[in-house]
Length: 265
Image 1: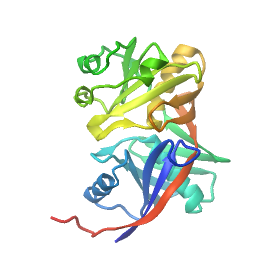
Image 2 (image 1 turned 90 degrees about the vertical axis):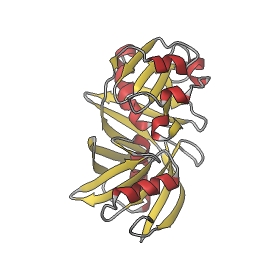
Image 3 (image 1 turned 180 degrees about the vertical axis):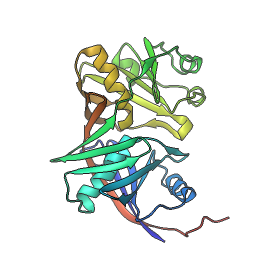
Image 4 (image 1 turned 45 degrees about the vertical axis):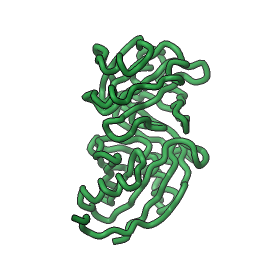
């Protein structure tokens, strides 16, 4: 069996920036264990698979370790493949997913994702987070992930967490964030329990960060940078109970996967 494979740098204006995602368009679903094996072989933070349905597509995302319910950068990468490589003609793509319907609109070179907001709520700071970071945060919240707020930009940029502590947490990952002098806020994201020590740019995290910072800043639209080693810039906007996440993407490689229909025993 031969499957097309695209590696796309999402939230990037040029290769080697942003967050790389693998994208595999399918005509019908493969067995879950084969999709998981492909994601593990790709060894990127996410591999996206999609199949056509009705007036759109059904999308699923796999880390090297397991399937996840929502992924922003691999959805952006999948939209780039559809719009720019596979010749999708409409201005809007609708993806059915485990997190509901996700719409992506093309606006010149920009792709705008319409995701459900996931407002975080205040919580006690887990002891694992206290042990993982050298500096105490000023606030802790949770939604799909723990959202940890620090006082200064340098606290985010210099953070070197103990992944052995973070892997023990019950949620997907940990977002750390602080106000910025250059942007509205900056952030980093860690998900070691899913095989992702640090994710370069995490689109789905902004479904939590946009509602949080809107409640603090009195604004609903933000210019943001995720200050990982690769780095990535985007804008996000809270609109009612949705978050619009806007970024660019570029193709890094295109190829074919050749696999057997059954995994080896």
